Length: 405
Ligand code: ATP
Ligand code: MG
Image 1 (spheres, rainbow, N blue to C red):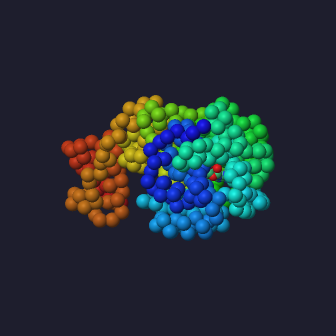
Image 2: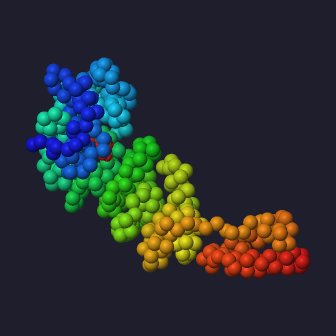
């Protein structure tokens, strides 16, 4: 079996690195995601290479060939090569010596099958010769890829016990590449070890969650995770109908041709409650940007305002997300249409205008400005002469109130 030919295989930068690392006529091999994705006919994003050469030797040879070498994970045996502005991760063959569920101690190896055996899934343990395109498959990854079966190499329980992050990787890779039910042994093992996820760093969990929510349709996998108790330790707040809510969101994203977004999808599976969202964001150490978006969506996705009123309050992107999340009215597609390309108007009145009309500088100005803004938004941003009418009315009321005091 040969890797299907594709332009990226003829990339000069890749060839430069491959030639530099040839040893006894044997090139390094492409491994993991690039082989898998190329076989599936999916665009190949990053190319990872594996080699029996030790990291020092990899570095020496790259530098000798005029290629920049960055030791990214030297203790794990990874060197990043930067050739013609492109990067390649080059990892020395290795074998796991001991693992504790969080971190593996590895030693370098010379046998390709040893290196394959420490990888997680059979479909992620395929290698290809970059020149001949010959594929090396030590654990029936090709058959599993054909069957769309995401299967651990070896015993699922043991592989998860070695590294608990593999629980989340199981659902992510199944969501992306699997067909039908999740592998039974893997699901049982994942459920049995779910509690141990707590011991992983929150950044790693959040990162996996982000990747899971970025796959084209994460809904069935998320529902399976919920049913298997996977969220219990790190996201107990997840809503009971998370799978259904996500499925609806994915459908709306497709219908409206909106690119998926992690924040929007995360919001779909969280309660519409800002306090819970704040707590979750702190626990998972989410970025400030993501936290703010989630809070705004929690606060507004059940608001009865029109799309334009929402957009005025929280910006066009968040308003569109609130509509896609579907807690609002049924005309969501038309409503989204009404804000795409719309320029959010600015309140056409300033405090100075009110003082010019007779208000005294002070808190009354801000208060009146707010009343004007509320009215103007309620009336869907009318132009002149209505603006002046609203202003004159509000100023008159404020002056009347002042006189009463
Ligand atoms: P993606 O397109 O998501 O990057 P990928 O297959 O390249 O997919 P990575 O997470 O980048 O996935 O990992 C690269 C390879 O390293 C995997 O294909 C797999 O062989 C191996 N690998 C990564 N993480 C683990 C892990 N936790 N346990 C075992 N093997 C792993
Ligand atoms: Mg990768």
